[in-house]
Length: 196
Image: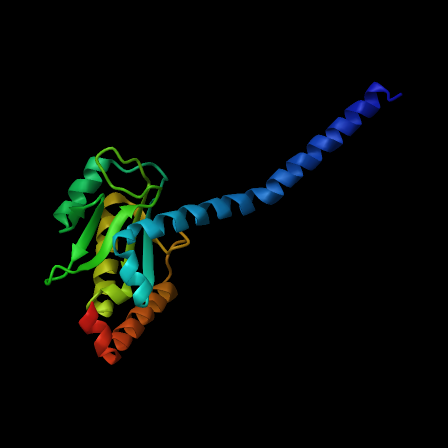
């Protein structure tokens, strides 16, 4: 028969091991959850053109604008700001369009289901662009980066990459080179341009 002291020692050892396991696996599960929410939002952004995507190449560039203090943005402020910056509201998303009324990129909530409406509570705005759906990918990327910078300044947000880490100058250059590669691809593929 175990004494009270031995029972207390066994219980303490069990609790200590559970606490250690919790802290060891906490970052793994949190990181996985964030990646799942990102991947859940992406398909919904371009679902109306999903059949065209299967035919042509696709290269998404995603920027996240995350509130510096992780507090939710005022939805009315966001909607007004985006409209003032020239975005058009369609199907629960805001889009930026070129002169020929072709979409350059979309802005959505970074939290599922991704829709931006008057009652939306979010602390992450997601900007997404498919380089192969824009007429001039290089110019489109620069426009997206400029708009992201303007929005971030006005709502006190940090510009982050698709994994939601603060974006670095090297990452901006990497995304810029992706846009340039897409531009080169489009100029060498006349059939691709005619069928879009």
